[in-house]
Image 1: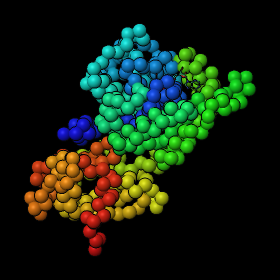
Image 2 (image 1 turned 60 degrees about the vertical axis):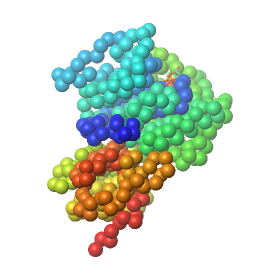
Image 3 (image 1 turned 45 degrees about the vertical axis):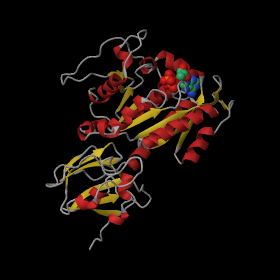
Image 4 (image 1 turned 90 degrees about the vertical axis):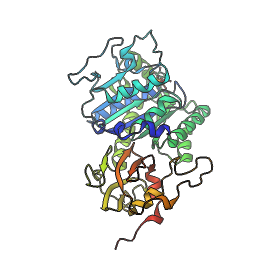
Length: 402
Ligand SMILES: Nc1ncnc2c1ncn2[C@@H]1O[C@H](COP(=O)(O)OP(=O)(O)OP(=O)(O)O)[C@@H](O)[C@H]1O
C-alpha cells in the first residue's frame, strides 16, 4: 500500500467541508518569512470578511503565537463537543504547538507523533465554519509536508521565497515536491524584495529582484507578489501585532492584501465539485454535489464540475472547460494503475483483462484530497487511485452520447 493510499482513506477525507479552502504556505528553506506571510495573509483574508483559521504546522519551531500575541504554555480549553478551542487573535482562530508547550521547552516528537498532532490540529479543533484554513508549514520538503498534502484535501500551496538565487532554487524543489503529491501551486511570493525606507516608505531594490517572477514563469505557476523588506515587519512580529493590523498603510501591507484578493478570487475560480464525498453507486446515495460555478471555455481541463451516474455502466464527468465525458465502468476498472494492476518497476500491465467480469460495476466512489477519486468495484478491488488528469485523459474509453 502506498503512503497516499494509507493516509487518504475516504474516512480521513470525511467531515472537512466546514474547513473551507485549505491553503498551505510553504518554503524550501527556513527564515524566508513564511510565518510572517501566513499570519498577514490570514489577517488580510479576514479583513475581506472571510472566516479564517490558521494552523501553525511548524511543530518544532512554532512562531505564530509570538507574531499574534497569543499566550503560550497554557493548555487550551476543550469545547463541549470535546474539541480543542482555538486561540482567537485579531479576528482569526489559531492553533499552534506553542500554545501547548512552553517557549523554552521545544517539542520533541518522533515522526508518527508529528502526523498525529497535525491531524489533531486540523480535525480535532473547534474551528466552526471557516472560509479558509491557512497551514503555516515548517520549512523544507519532509514528513509534515507529505502528511498534510496527502491526508487533507488541500486547495493548493503558496510558496514563499527570497530573491536570492539559492533560495529560489530551493523553492523550485519545494514546488516540484508539491506537484508530485498533486497539490496545486497557487503561486509564488517573493519576500524581502527591496527595502522600505522607514521614514518615507519608498521601496529601494537593494538585492537582485524579480527572481520569483522568473521562476514562476519558468515553472508555469502564478506569481502572487513581491513583499518589500521592511524593518516594521520585524517589530510588528515581536510585538504580536502583524503589519496589516499595526501599519495598514505600509507598502508591504498593501501587497499582503493584494495577495489575499488574488488568492480568494483564484480559489473561487478554480473550485470544482465540493469534496469530500463518498458516493454509493448502486442507489446513487451521497452523490457529489455539482460545483457552484458554471463551466466555462477558459476553465481548467483537470477540474471536474460534476460527476454523474449516467446509467448503471457509465460514469459521466462534466469538466470546468465545458467538456462532457463518459467512461464505461469496466474501462475504469481496466485503467487501474495500482501496484496490483501495473508492475511498478516496468510499468507493464499485470491485470489480465479477461479476468475482469463484463458486468463489473463500481460499488463506491470517493474523493481523495481534491485531485483524485478512489473506486471500489464489485470484484472486490479497491486500491486504485484515479487522478482527475488520468480520468480526463481516458479519451479512448469515451462512448458516443446517442
Ligand atoms: N518582508 C520582511 N521584511 C523584514 N523582515 C521580515 C520580512 N518578512 C519576514 N521578516 C522577518 O524575518 C524573520 C523570519 O521570518 P519568519 O519567522 O516569518 O520566517 P519563516 O520562514 O517562517 O521562518 P522558519 O523557518 O523559522 O519557520 C522574522 O524576524 C520576520 O519578522
